[in-house]
Amino acid sequence: MMNHKGNVMQQDMIDLLQKIKENKFDFTEIDKLHLATSLMDHIGDLRSEVRDELVYVVLAHLFHDQHFNEEELTQFLNQLKSDSYLFYDINNKEPWSVLKRSFSLLQLVILVYVHRRDHAIDVKEIDLLFDDFMNYLNQETVFIGYDDRVGWVHATAHSADLLAQFVQLETCDEKKLLIMFNQMLKLVKQRHVIYTHNEDERLVKAVKKGLDRQLLSESFLTNWVKQFTVDSEVIDQEQRLNLKHNIKQFLSTLYFSCQDNKLYVYIADDIKTIMINDIYK
Image (cartoon, rainbow, N blue to C red; front, side, top):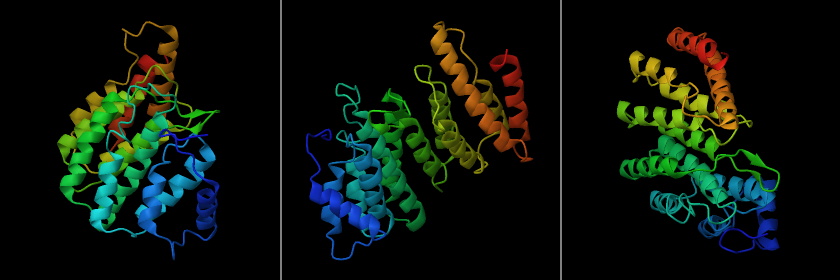
């Protein structure tokens, strides 16, 4: 099975990646830059055992474990957010092109974390990535979590993971938090897919880390929570059921995350009201 550029990962490369995993990601005597560059070509491989278990984990360790300098990390960041990766076939003319987009997100999660941890990668580059990421969220349309044919897809969960990194940045101000909370509202209120693979937990993690910044007003958050309702213009019965399920899962998870924290009791109370008056109506 090929990746989206038509390149088949050769068995010797698969063997090398398996050996690296077995050796606990020891890259001694390995040309790390060449390896990472090669793995980028297979980031959206259709085989889950290659994409998830080899390419993702090895590339993530290369980025995470301080093997590259700032210039090299920046080059990878710019590649990952490009039309060839994060925006690859955004109109879905190719089957499963979402895999390349979604697994580009996961590597960007690592790079933003490395920026937070090490102050690596210039802040201006991270700001540009933020803008591109918000643009991506406005264009992505494939939000399924898992498919038997290709394994984990998880564009929503991976987006939530990247949001969780961005909300923790020192440079993330109230304006950016507002934008991200509204993006999370849109992700939850997807009505063409039913979330059944812990998307709610990943999104709530991002929300809680955003709340912990204590930059958002109570009035904004109260109004934000009140928007998690089944919109009257959604007439299709299946879409209404999907929407109700997704909202219920998310709000239930958020409720239990907020109810025991005195700072967020009002959020839990607002959620309870919505659940009674709308979701369980």
